[in-house]
Image 1: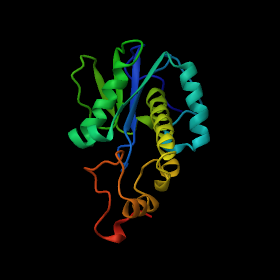
Image 2: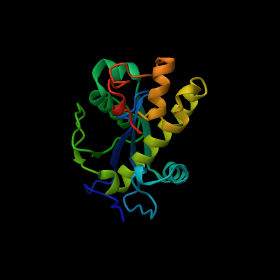
Image 3: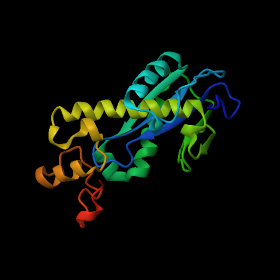
Image 4: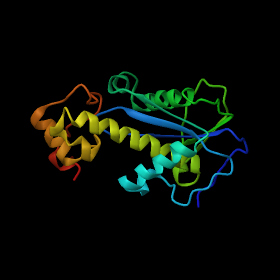
Length: 200
């Protein structure tokens, strides 16, 4: 069972991202403030859930959250400032998009950089420990998947509706055949030099 609160502050926001390891598309972050005594038996790290479960949980999070917001950084921004800084940028946009200012932030992972005065704690694998981070994980993942599905309507040859821009064998083979799009991250290794490095 995931925990409802880390800091003791009522307006504690959980922060998580999706899409850092992708070859294409934005990196998306979400910030979620849940009720202090919130309980949900199914809410978990989005990577432990299937697509249908994530979609159902997104509806619950959007309905139950005290406040929520999603932010993103574009492929061009990723190429300009690198993926780590672009992730921080997306997180800041999500935090600043909240309808209520958070009193405390709990951020999934082991690093965070901010100019905000809000106190924070980084929690490794926090999306499997705290409900608000898990909720942010679900929102970031589902909103990003929706984005990649929309892009797939125009760029169907890359299979983004299935792989969400991650470096699958199919995605890399499509890059080798069709080249890149404006949504590919040019600063990433889009095609490995050795064929055996292509992910199965």
